[in-house]
Image (cartoon, rainbow, N blue to C red; front, side, top):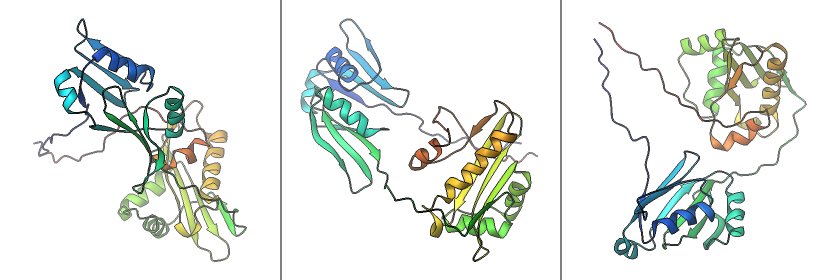
Length: 274
């Protein structure tokens, strides 16, 4: 008997903006703001839209009366490489009403007024640039596994919810390759990294952790260098290597050859069978 209950979820949203001229609006978003994909419906068009690489979609509906009343309404778009996009819009002479600025809520933003009077804000989460410290002479990177207690302490130090003992033991025992960073002066393990996978077609970089007191000293870089070096020597030819991370760490992993790609994921939901 399957006791799981399917729950509704929202997987996509598109604003539909009333405009006085669908063709002019679509062309503006395509030619001035740079949206690569566009479409229209009707002859002459009474509906249309633009999109950007499957991540942002806007629709436009012909209704001059409503369009006149809603001038000044806004749309907020989360983007990547906001500084490059800003320069592109400046070059294309978009009507930039608020210049690129870092907001208190942690985003770099600027706002364009489109041909209908709508305000379109382009935003990217700001990254704080920290000066990299020198790699500490007391730190040694070694290919060995942490203990369950060491792994738990590291996870807790960065605010992660630790797994159960059984789950951590399984992770340690099934890892294809494990590397740790230790402080020779104190004997403390202050960093680790796991490489999981089937050692045939795919690998998964997991739980690269550095204790907050030791971050920004190139220790995380050293852990990743050891993992990538192992893959170069022992990894299965042409195997896929993946990882999950937030946007704020994308540039860190990019230096090791990782690129962002389209994908999908889900999590296992155990079912009670009777």
